[in-house]
Image (tube, rainbow, N blue to C red; front, side):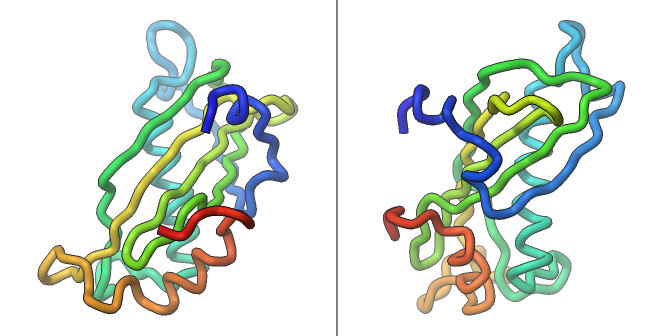
Length: 154
């Protein structure tokens, strides 16, 4: 996906949303949200969705998602005391893997501030290997609800 296409993202491009109130400690010495906080936000919206819509229970689920790749493209700054709206979609869904896209928006500003990508491989908790049948049915069904029409299945 080109940077120009990512810059055009709007809230409506995402099927699940989560609000985050920035904190003073999120800012770095340059007076904007530190890059590490973006990773925290990506992890938070993905896991909130998995718990709310895919029956994931992190302490006891038979399968867990391992992050095998993440990236972020930044188009503008966000900092305390801003409210941030996060958007989540699924760009690709495979047998045991999923590629999420996360949009970061500042409340009251239409343009996207950052777009992140986050890849999970779902593995058996005990072996840390993908199951022969792939991800659990409840996980797949929940993720399919966010799969962007016309997106590739892995």
